[in-house]
Amino acid sequence: MKQKRIATIQDLSCFGKCSLTVAHPIMSAMGLEVCPIPTAVLSTHTYKFKGWTYRDLSADIPAIVDHWKREGLTFDAVSTGYLGTVEQIGMVSDFFDAFPGMIKVVDPVFADNGVLYTGFSEEYAAEMTKLCARADITVPNLTEASFMLREPYRASGYDEEYIHGVLRRLCALGCKTAVVTGVIYEPTHQGAVAYDSEKDEFVEYFNENIDVSFHGTGDIFTSALAGAVTLGKPLYDALKIAVDYTVESIKATMPDKDESWYGVRFEQCLPGLIKSL
Ligand code: PXL
Image 1 (tube, rainbow, N blue to C red):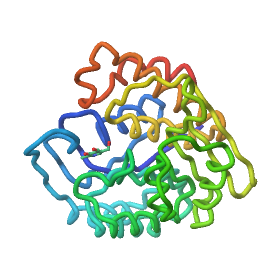
Image 2 (image 1 turned 120 degrees about the vertical axis):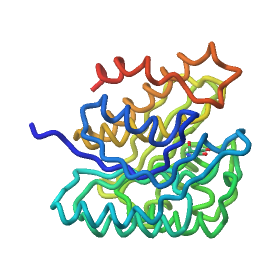
Image 3 (image 1 turned 180 degrees about the horizontal axis):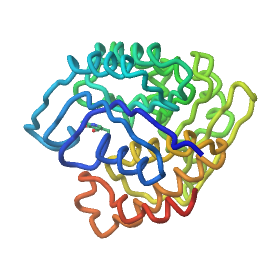
């Protein structure tokens, strides 16, 4: 079988495992040819670190895309994550136009725990919502979903009917499949729930709920999910692969609980991820 090729558009944070430093190794380990477009270079990610550097690479993005077009390259899929600016959201949208027919996975990455990430505005959230509407699969957490739908954020105390409603309303914005992560119906279990609007079908997968918060786990989940979908896995299998890998990575990091914001030990769990394919 021909090797699958995925483009991934997000920042390169030199320290603190997230965005490209997790997406690239994870999807490579899954057997994909990974073609990164780094949107910015930062000395660290922006969560808890102070005084980080930020080199905006926006000007390079259209030039890279033009060159790829001239070379006649094609992609089976594209996966996007943290982007710095509204302008970059427009560039990703142009990338979608430049290479039609790819599977488009968009993780909005602008908020968590009820609030926007540092440096992000309501305007950014609204523009990102439009990009998610163009996706085959969008992967918000419940905070991002609430911003996208302009509904109040519910941290807990919701039920399946509420989550299914959120997913239907996300797909009504335009995306084919919506996946919400971090769903907890009962305190012992956490997982992801998806709605495939073309099949009018809900799919869910839960694993144990480990009551800790580690940085970068959203990017790990989305990388494994995008990799699995690009390999042609059905939605349920892709959710299971991504949830189980994220949970294993969190478990492996328990000895580093006090540095949970550096990122998780996803590297030592790669053999298990490969076996799960
Ligand atoms: O994990 C998402 C992410 C990606 N890139 C940068 C970040 C964050 C979250 O804080 O700061 C630079």
